[in-house]
Image (cartoon, rainbow, N blue to C red; front, side):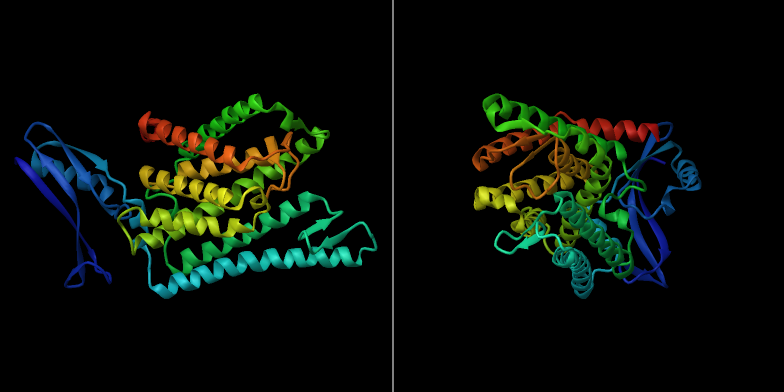
Length: 378
């Protein structure tokens, strides 16, 4: 047999697709056949493993008289939302559950802390309503409360995706059967390395604004907690803003990068309450929108959330442990501290870092090399 063989899969019908006598006819790919040659089966859709059996490959090889190789094409990232149920009310309910758990738990914990400062009998601990801060309370307590709120957000997201949308939480990350942890590591290492290089550059320009902590033992003592909670917090934000929100927007808008813009905008909104906005409201807003847009574009280009999960974790771990700054939302004590935050400089450095991250990841093809080596190892 010579030519191209179009493949279809017949399986029990669902509410979508072409239904004939209770079965759904699903096009899954094209097989190029040439006698005596090595045929290549290009599978365009992920049908949850039904089509990856050895018996299918053996049958196709006999049909076309050529040895068949599988080239499994992953589902476009935005299309992963279609694996579940996507009625408008499901998104409304899912968002309500996620936001309510997040804000409800966070608010309840801060109220409990405020009540404690009122009854502990210590006049040095109190709530300053003008500054909106707790006085006399270890700042690390504030950090713990914020991260517990994100754990509640993660729980709300899991309930929404698994039980309301009826799909796996993994589909917010990738279309593959397993998460590529090497891609997560690549994102963490690459973005973290760029942060270190550009911070050293900034230090060389103005060394007087940096100083070392007087209590490095405390930073080391709290580091294990930070290294556990911070990646959970950043991964939760990626699952919500780049996963749930952007895939949901992709059901309505597919052109002109609208899902990425919507994701970046929604990501910016909760950060408007961060204290660092005192350094320049619109410039800080532009930074958060920019990093949200960068992570959205990287997600769409790499067709997975893995690289940006690592990159986002590196940003917050770096701020929480290595170099923190005044009025930071991450109220932890790091090894170094920057006393002067210039919003304009930060925007310029971020643009440089964003371009380098994107170019190294895709134009230098670090993402492709890691992806190939992982598939080869599997």
